[in-house]
Amino acid sequence: MNYLQILLMQSKMAAGFEIIAMLLVAVVIGFVTAWFYAKSVNEKRIAKLESETNENKKEAEKLKEEKNNLQKTFAEKENEIKQLIREVKALKSQNLAAVTETEEVKLKNEITEQLLTEELEELPNLRQGMHLLDYNSFGTATEEEKDDLKMISGIGPFIEERLNALDIYTFRQISKFTAKDIEIIDDAIECFAGRIERDEWIVQAAELVNDEEKQNELLQRIRAKKSLIYYDRIGIAKKEEADDLTEINGIGGWINKKLNALDIYTFRQISNFNNEDVEIVTDAIQFFPGRIERDEWIQQARDLIRIEISKSEHLQRISVMKNRIYYDRLGVAHKHHANNLTLIKGIGNWVEESLNALEIYTIKQISQLTAEDIVIISDILEISPNRINQDHWVEQAIKLTQASQKKNVDNVID
Image (cartoon, rainbow, N blue to C red; front, side):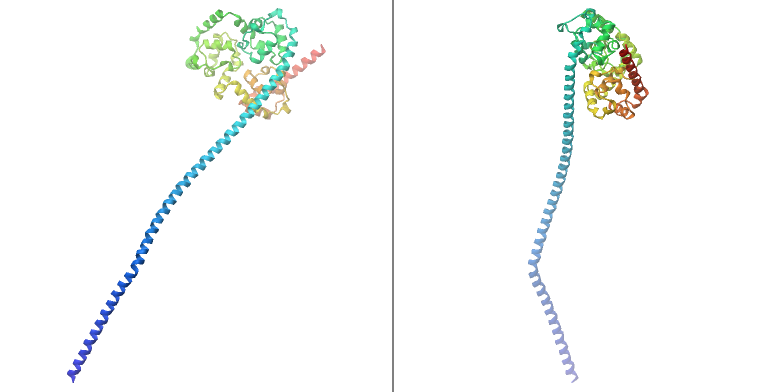
C-alpha cells in the first residue's frame, strides 16, 4: 500500500512537473510569438517614424538654412536702410546748401542790382560837378589814353569808375593833383574823403608815369635788396605759386610788382612778417613808413590763408550775415553816404571793407553801437569783442560826429 502510494505520488509529481514545464514552454512560445508578432507589427510604424524623423531633420535643416538666409537678408536690408538714411541726410544737406547758395546768389544779385542802380544814379551827379575841377592844373585825358588806375593802392574798380566819370583817366593827371584838386575830388567822390592823401595816390602815380624802362630800373634796384630779406623766417616762394596780393587792401598792382621783385609772392610769406621784416620791406620797396601796419597786411594775409577763399568771397559771406544787424538801432546808410571809417583808430582798410559789407558805412552808425551790436559784429568779423571796446570805437565815433556837426553849423553860419 505504502509502495503504491509512493508511486502514485511520484507519478503525480512527475505529471505536475511536466505540466509546469509545458506551461513554461507555452509561456516562452507565447512570449516569443508575441514578440515576433509585435515586432512585425511595429516595424512598419518604426520605419515610418524613422522616415518621418529623417524628414523632420531635413525640414529642420532647411528651416535653419532659411533662418540664416533671412538673417543675412535682414542684415543686408538693415545696411541698405542705414545707407539710405545717410543718403537722405546727404541729400537734405545738399538741398540745404543749394537753398543757401540760391539765397546767397539771390542776395548777391539784389546787392549787385542795387549797386548798379546807385552807380547809374550817382555818375550823372558826379559829372555835374566837373566844372569845379581845374583841368588846367592836372591836365586832360581821353578814354583812349586810359591807364589802369587800379595799379595805385587804394583805387579799386569802383573808385576808378568814379574817377573816369570825372574824365580822370591817367597816372599823369593824378600825379599832378594839388591840394585844391584833392579837396574837390574828395567832395565829388564823397565816400572816399581823405583817401587820396592817406593812400599816397600822387607818389604812386608819379612812379607809374615813368616809362617802362625807368620802371624796370626801379624794380631792378629793389631786386638788389633781396639779400636783406629773411627768407628763412618768412618762407621761400616761386612765381608759379604767386597769390593775388592785390586781394590785400593797401596793395595795388604797382606795389604787387615791387613785392614780387623781392620774391615775395604769397599771403603766407606776408603773414610771417615781424616788425623787422616790415621795416626792411618798407624801405626796399620805397613804401610809406607805417602803411603796412596801418593797412593790416599781416592780419589780412592770415585771414586769407585761414578762410582759403578770395577776399570778394569772404566779403560776400559777411554780407549774407547782415540780417543779424539791428539797423533800426544803428540807422540805415548807403554806399554813397560812406565816411572814411579809418579815421577811427583801430579800423584799418580790411575792417572798414568788412563793415561796409554789413552796410555799416558811417561814423554815426558806429557811434550808436550797443554792447549787443558789438558782440554781433565781433562774431561776424571774427575779431575779439575787446578790440572794439579797447580801441574805443564808439567814443571816437561820437567825438568825430560831434566835430562834424559843429563844422556843418559853422559853415551854415559863414
